[in-house]
Length: 147
Image (cartoon, rainbow, N blue to C red; front, side, top):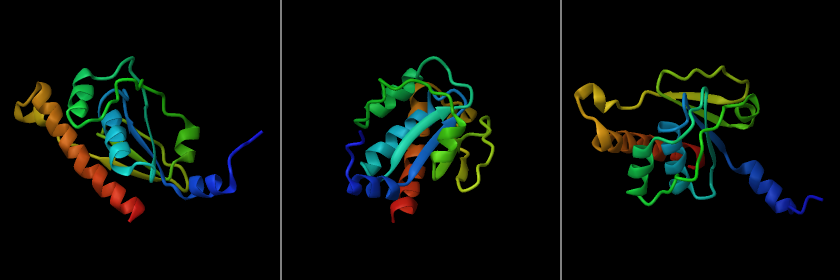
């Protein structure tokens, strides 16, 4: 038996759903999802997935989000499914390696994120710059979704 109230159903229908996608779902898409959860609270339903998911999260991604009070350590890479695409209001593809076929009624955005390694910046400093770039984009997306 469904125990949700009518108000729960109305709220669920009015909350925008975002799926962040990258290839492995171990780094950038997981960071974007964690950052959006922090910014949005319960104003946006958030998930992430990969087109060819890896087996674990990028440890530096976990570390640099923890610096901001965001714990994604329990997350696991997940395969992007057609159902997840259809259920989303917005699909955000991070980088140019993952490819998502458009679904009618679902907006798809591609974020070409900063790649500090092209400037010789690696390790945790690289990941902090990537995190900060994604955080700026997440705040902008949140503002567009909820006003």
